[in-house]
Length: 206
Image (cartoon, rainbow, N blue to C red; front, side, top):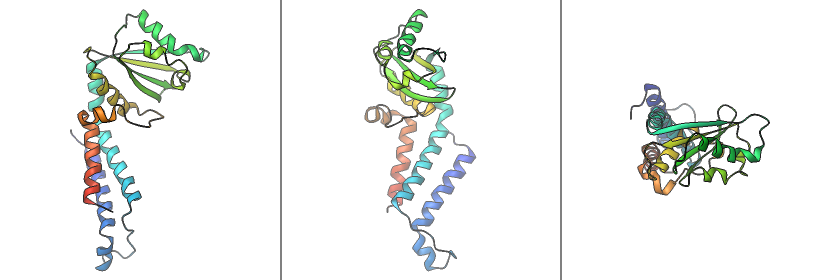
């Protein structure tokens, strides 16, 4: 993975801040800092770890977008402002079936407005999975739904696709990463993010 100079500099600067706080007592001992250097705390360190992980994720986004374009067929359904909320999920199923989209494996992304992502989810039961969730807020409040059909009709690609789209769009209510235990070991972005977290905690214990 190629990291830009800006990301590398930001990454190095953040690590430098963590290292400075870890060595705060030693720096004060030799009079290196004219002011009191705060000591390293778990809460502050974890905040810096989140920033490092976001830099790694940012570096992976172009690769993930290209991978999604190369391996999927994208179909979008839009709704007018007066469209009945409870009918949106079923409308997605009916419109896409009318276009000949009968794939069993897919990943759907719902949006409110132009960019706000509400939900990224996958289905191995085709469009029936979407229709069955007609009462969920991420379909009721959606202004458009985008469905990605893998070009390779294999179930094992679904966790990879769902994870990639979650990185790209970052849903509004993201409580856990998709297929976390099952897929994270095979996701390069998640793997590197987890490695960064593990190494920082190991090198800079509190």
